[in-house]
Length: 239
Image 1 (cartoon, rainbow, N blue to C red):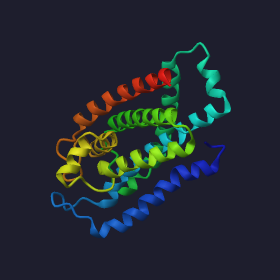
Image 2: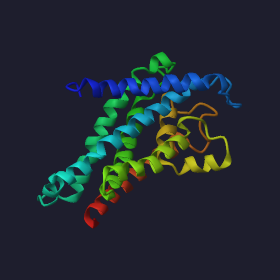
Image 3: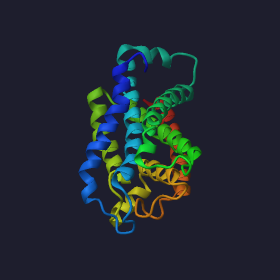
């Protein structure tokens, strides 16, 4: 990444601009009845971290389509290595990229208002790792079954981007159907877990539904990570 300054610029500056512009627009109208002191830019900061992980997964797994078109993937498939090693290697590689990019953006946290002392950094790392594995696994499955880059981008636009928007990343779930949706949304588990980790273990009142606590997010995201890893192995063997 250090050899590509433009990529480093995009990793740090793009989400920062996105956070500042969207945040500035919603600050005057953002009100949470349960928590009048909840600041929108602090609220949205965690959502942007999830977006950084999501975009890292999308842009890194699309290389599978290029590898297949160039013939490199065919050479990998006939090699002695197992399908599990192939899937695990790709997912862990993408997760490392996502962790690095998210870590760079988190450096802005103290200027937003997050207390370094109050933050449970262990849980921040755990949720970022599980979120990276989950989203990289989703990207892997979608890239593997996509016939072209255009088809892959269409799947991302129709499935993953709406999941991020409806995860509580941009606005808290304040209707019954949204509260149900976040309970079965992998990106919502990442967002909810990070909110609780940055707040010292319990997410700020009004930022997520009561059921979306740290324990629920941890168990759900862990199980989904295992599931999506097995799903990646399955599609490798079947298609």
